[in-house]
Amino acid sequence: MIIRRILGQTDEAPTSPEWELFDLVKDPAEMSNVYGLHNYESITQTLKEQLKALQLQYRDEGLEYPEMPNVQADYFWTSEHE
Image (cartoon, rainbow, N blue to C red; front, side):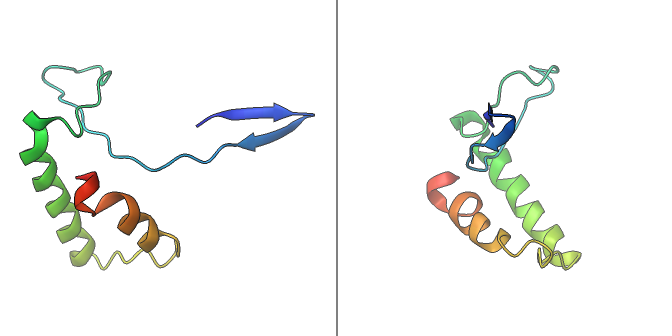
């Protein structure tokens, strides 16, 4: 996120949410995001399925964040972003 200071005010430029996935065996310092790389498609899909299952199990509907359904639909669960 870019933070600009104009006349003493802080203005945060909006950024799109994004997934992060790190291979802790090959990259223990978490310097290289491997999300979206072909070699990690299977684990990415598995982790997303586990996340959905946990959200259902714990009834995590995100009601305290009313913008979350739109964010999830736009960025997290669409095939274009997976």
